[in-house]
Length: 400
Ligand SMILES: Nc1nc2c(ncn2[C@@H]2O[C@H](COP(=O)(O)OP(=O)(O)OP(=O)(O)O)[C@@H](O)[C@H]2O)c(=O)[nH]1
Image (cartoon, rainbow, N blue to C red):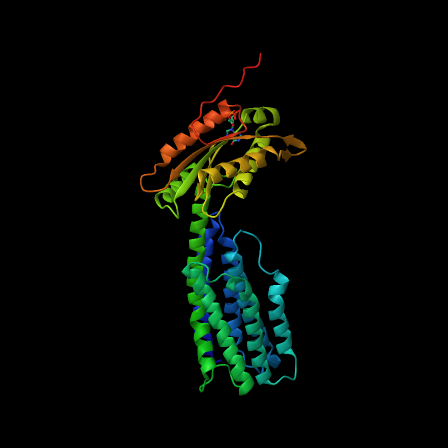
């Protein structure tokens, strides 16, 4: 490549690297999910910025070692960006992605292979495009999974840009195998594949970085919204999020519109705290939430209203089914004492149920009040039970 082409491409990739680095610096101050991916993305672009000037060194110098190194660095940059993408797409923040050795092994092997003496230039070019295609195909396996399932558009854009790069590599490899060329990568009479490759090297890093940065902001936003809606101790919805979502569900009835609201309270929880300590009490609350989560179906909602009080909104259930599911939850908690550091803590639940047919007139407050009244009845009737109607409750005999 001549010096102008190299300068041009280096500038474009450098611009993308600067954008990514600035975003990373801003995100570094915040806690969240987007920093790891950005750091690796910057590294990938940085490696490419280092690679491009080396392509200006003539192949005759040191047996083409500079060109071999440049090819290896370019590939390493691509691999780092692919790993950054994979890490960012993961559902949970984790060190994830393929291990470092695996990511950088192909670029290293390529550098060695290209430095091997006695190769024809055509072979070297084919080797480079073959290795780039392999890196892309291996790196894209993870991100491609679930691309059709409601992914936000910045994520799709990044994946598509990498997909386009794979097509360009395939085309260049094909051209090179059919009609081998030995000249500089982008000489005067460039082929279709070379034109595409040049365009891709120029603009793809910049567009991919725009989309990647947007994708990170969007994920960060969703993560923050998730945090704001989550009860920190149990991981289910907090009161505000539960009320908000429940109100939304109630105003949009599905199917027959039958809904049940369960008000759930741990029995004698004060005694658990007094006897075992607050930390053990916390673990018990988390175990109750786990049991609730296990009994959820797709459209149900669970939340912690505060203290030892929980709520569940069951969608599309008849009164009989709601009672059955509440009983199953009560039994599951009563028969599985929580084990904490050698302590066995038995806990039971009292549950009040209110039924309603969802529609515009349904008021959550009224439903909560009914379920709360029935919960109170369950407590008065001796606890560890489910009540789903307003019944006369005989007070248990007072111990003499
Ligand atoms: N460990 C722990 N305890 C909490 C938390 N929030 C509230 N509590 C305690 O939960 C207890 C709630 O007790 P109550 O619901 O009033 O009464 P109870 O002992 O459960 O008795 P009944 O509800 O009548 O069966 C209080 O002792 C609170 O201090 C929390 O986040 N963690």
